Length: 112
Image: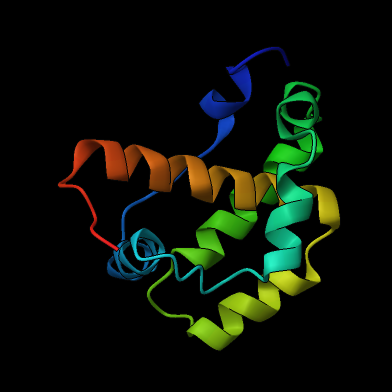
């Protein structure tokens, strides 16, 4: 896939837990990911995303479905993230920050 085409294959549904995770993220609290995971995800992120395989996108979609489910706890979500293959986890983290950036651009400014 080239450029931004990878986004068309991802499914993100809004849930209360996703809203809560993004609200915490607006304040700099990224509850699902460690700092090391975030750093690795952003190393050469754009290059990696443009070459995603269909199987990786399917795994990202499966992970997204579990992470936005209101029926799983935060601890279960963190465990799921930890168990993902690194390439899938990196895409997921990058996607999280893209969604968070979009949310910040559309909303009222956050004061730290």
